[in-house]
Length: 498
Image (cartoon, rainbow, N blue to C red):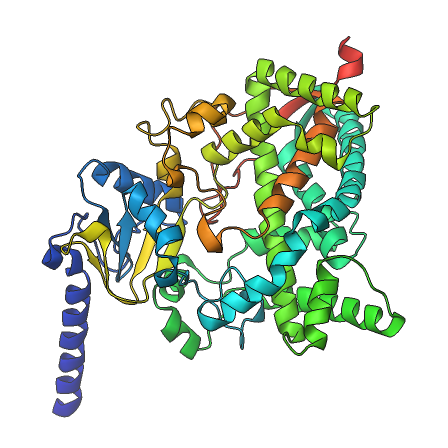
């Protein structure tokens, strides 16, 4: 009995020493930080009462004028570097990318196969996979996908008109509608499927897409453990994605591959590229499903939210909406009323509107990287970064820093005109990341966003209504920025306003 008590006391003493050592890391180094608490470190309230950006942004604002290149934060017991200096962000993402190519996100291909995708994987496996997948997102492939997305864009406008005609005072919740649009786009361009999410909100493809982002498999404490100690979580064979969601996407990929191989179907789409890689022995079916899943994940929620946020801001400032609509009408007139890939490239103000939407509402409000080797930040030996240490770049905080973007909470598309762009540092706008590991689907995301806005604005006027929130609240349990209470706008046919 005494031996058991002694062993218990020793275990408690070691545990206390370990926790105290971990949570005094930044204090011992003399790096600016906020005192952590056990067990959440600086993450108190994460995913319950606070969004991740609501925790990180105040820390960035507190230390950004200190003159230090970074501050220290604690993600549970994990000491993490919070980048404050935009030059350091540029070095991490671009100049010294070779030392910071890993994101350090949890992935477990064996037990949680959908996490083994391009966005999460690290090490020697990431680079060749990125190289092989890049041709899918070249401008030639985008041009090929353009007509398919336009067909869905026309369906979007039709459904929007039908819903507005049947809605009380024409008031619609548009964020769900935008999600159904993007799920149909990706279903066609990636899986070659007619998902019919626009006509049927309960279509399984759209439902599973929403669930993949809104439903957590674990509570915030277990999720925090997985993300803070990914290597240990892998050894414990822990999973993050619900099994039925995994089964659904694996099943779609297996059925699609079987059908195409048996019938000799060849299409110029993303799935065909994955099938070719499978035939060369470069991907298993599970790895194919993971890559298809991230294409869906990256294009579904992010583009849908961006569309909702853009319409929200354009509804609040109708003069901007009219300006963009006039540009769309002028481009169509130059091309005999046809919306073409080339006419889309001529929509300069559209680019400004999308860029400002992504500034104010970056889909992923932070970036993470892992340092491979000991690294000295900006030549200052006091600010060293240890091998294996995580860095966090606070994208939302940077995008809302008044020293970089005056009046950051105002929606001003002209911020992204050439003369103003030239005055800002390279790493001042990071909705797609930057450097060799930027978002591979950036062109695709912009294209499906532009097509939706063209089809909607040429036909409808969007305005605020009594149900429109003055400020959008975000889903706290989601790392992405997603509206928590929907986005309600009044939708009117332009032809009926004249």
